[in-house]
Image 1 (tube, one colour):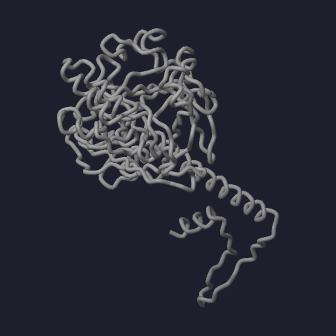
Image 2 (cartoon, rainbow, N blue to C red):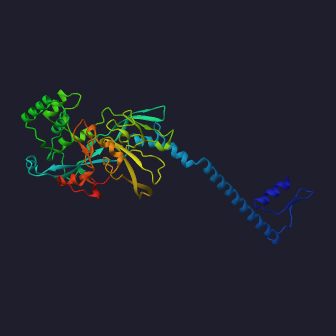
Length: 413
């Protein structure tokens, strides 16, 4: 036992002079000299051996930790734990109610030559007015987790007026703007019987309705009362279910909408992406791939594990379609590396430059390049979407209107 203690003390570098007891049990010390060359050398060896053991011990711990990280991959485990949608989960809560300020900036085109245009003397001349800024309070409610790795919810996008960001523009600004109700009911009844069209013409004359009228910016965006819309509401109940018409109000109408998105438990790369919208992988307004919204993002949560050359599918109901986004650059923000995406070139082409877009032609009637006919998403109203100021549209479109000034830096996606 004594030898074991002695060796252990040597291992730890502890040195003592040897002791013994005589017959009278008196403790005597030997005459060992701790400062002798022999003992100094032993102490140095013991100290070096201790340091080697310490380094070896920490080396084993480091190697074991590295092996554990390689096998267990704790970053992946934490990422999946946070990223997969679950009730109360961190990323799920960010998707349910995004804590970011999202703004809608509306610019309107005020018609400056109403009488000359209506008399056929001049082509349409417009002047951009805006911005009219609204904060979009995006959220998902009525959450229901399903057994197939999806979660269903009702999207909501209420808008709140933000005057301090509207640069002096007011909702009650008076402008000359299209009479959407007149243009819409005329479009819808254009294929009706002669009697129906005759009756409509009589009403238009009696009410002195004009295709361009003065109204406030708010009325144009969020609804104005019209005798024609009231008649349409009363006599064509299958057409519309509202008595006043506003363009932004209709674009942000989510009544009756619901969506189902992937939770990521079956495939984490799809967390937050759409499985169905209103119960379908396809928008009913389009045929073929033009109506596909499956695996698209509503902008809240994009695909996980992105690679540099991956494309993204982006869906907003107001666009009446999903858009493919392509990476155009990289950036760094707040110390994080990121990718910059734009809507792909010729996105609003109807098949002239992109044959796969031919399904965006409505009943074979194609609008000029750069315009997308979306009347199917808006009750038959004669509405087309484009980039601002007809950016990338057929030059003939811009030539038909004075006052459009497309600028790539301002008007691209």
